[in-house]
Image (cartoon, rainbow, N blue to C red; front, side):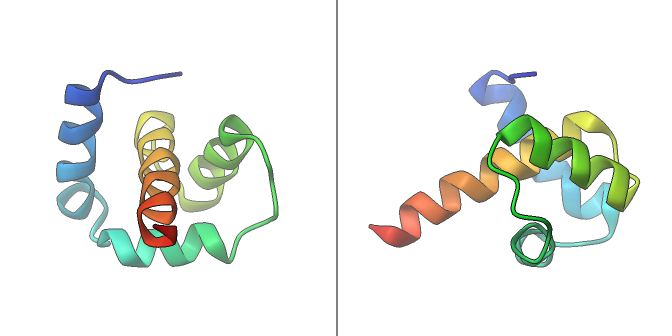
Length: 73
């Protein structure tokens, strides 16, 4: 599952309101989760573990990857 940049931005903007958790908290959850390599595996784990929709999980995993790349410079 892949989202357009516009859809991704909309999903990310809604996540704190929909889930009650902000992005840094979600990023910590992803970082403390299992060491899965593939994005789709990480998204499936997150959706199942956190009880969120697959669409939000995909957006969170993708945003986490973008965040890590930006932080590494």
